[in-house]
Length: 136
Image 1: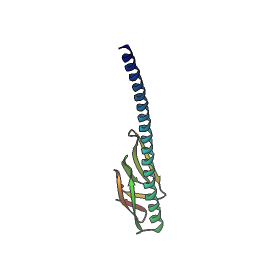
Image 2: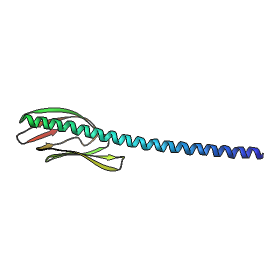
Image 3: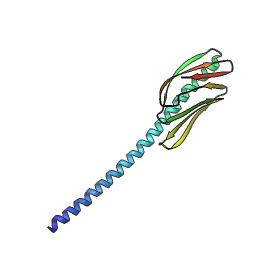
Image 4: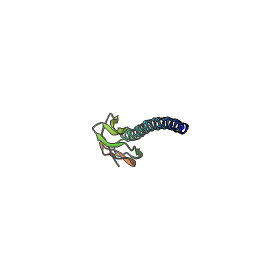
């Protein structure tokens, strides 16, 4: 009877060690996945703003009446976008908590609206006399 009890305790110790190692692996992978997702969302936001800003610069240089359409992908963590004066801002959550703002500055006035939620959108960019207008 004593041998069975000792074997049972040893088995419980071994299983608890295996469980603790498994938990450490799961937590570590979860942190890495969260970091990767945050980086992906930041890259998507930068790419979207780069595409929009390239289109805005292009139509502004072409002059009044020039227009183009850009297909952009807004990341899942985005929750607010602002187009005002000479700045485009896109705010998003990083790791579900901290707020990060991605922005682009222009040498000319810009106006309009951009999507506030995640998804893929067509953004129309058009040059007017003294500013560029954006809408989706």
